[in-house]
Length: 287
Picture 1 (cartoon, rainbow, N blue to C red):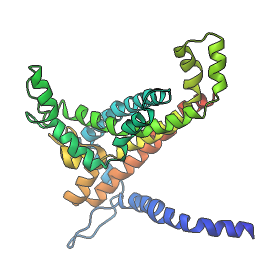
Picture 2 (picture 1 turned 180 degrees about the vertical axis):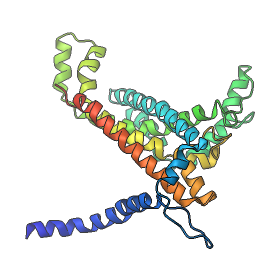
Picture 3 (picture 1 turned 60 degrees about the vertical axis):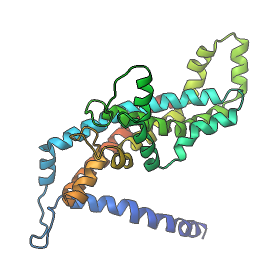
Picture 4 (picture 1 turned 60 degrees about the horizontal axis):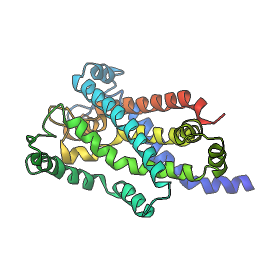
C-alpha cells in the first residue's frame, strides 16, 4: 500500500514531465524525418533529408561555431570569477552582506533588462564605454556592429550576469567545509595557495561539476539578449544555435527543419554532459 501511495504522489510530477519534456522531445525527433507541410502540399516522409540539408547549410555551421566559441568563452570565465568571488565573500570583511548582494544582484535581473542595460553601455559615441574611453582619447567603437567584437561583447554581458549565480553554489560549498581542515593546515604551516590547491579546490569538485553542467546548458539556451542587442547580426556573427532555430521556425516557417536543428542541439548537449561526467567524475570525490 505504501508503494501505491508513493506512486500516487509522483503521478502529477510524472504527467508534467512526460507532457512537457518527453513527449515534445519524441515529437520533435519524429518531425525531423518529415517535410514541412503547407495548405497545398501535405507533409511527407523524407527520412534523413533534413539532416542532409543541415550538413550543407553554411549558416548552421557558422552558428554552431559561434555557439562553441561562446561556450568556451563564457563557461570557464564565469566559473573562475564565481569561485574567486565566493572565496572573497566567505572571508570576514566589512559590509560582507552588502558585497554578497552586489555580486548576486545581476542574477535576479531579467535577461531582457540586462540586455537593455548593456545596450546603453555598448551604444557608439553616447554609450558608457565610449564616453569613458573618450576621456582617455580613445576613438568610438561600434561594439555590436563589428563582426569581430560583437560575440566577445555578448560574452562579457553573459559572464557579468551568470557569475553571481554560480557564486552562490560555491559559497554554500565553502561554508560546508570542516573548519578543522584549515586549522590543521595552518598548524602545519601550509600557505593559503597551497591549502586552496590541495584541499579547498578538490573538495569543491562536486560543486564544480554541477556548475559546469548548468553553465554548459545555459550557454546553448541563451537567446533573450540577441533580440535586444543584435538580432543575430551583423551577418550572423552573433547568432547562436537556439536563436537560429527560432528564426527557422517562426521567421522562415520551416518547422521540420527547425525540429532537425533542435534534435542536433539536444544530442550535442547530451554528449557534452556525458563527457563532463566521464572526464571529471574521478576528480569529484577527494581522495
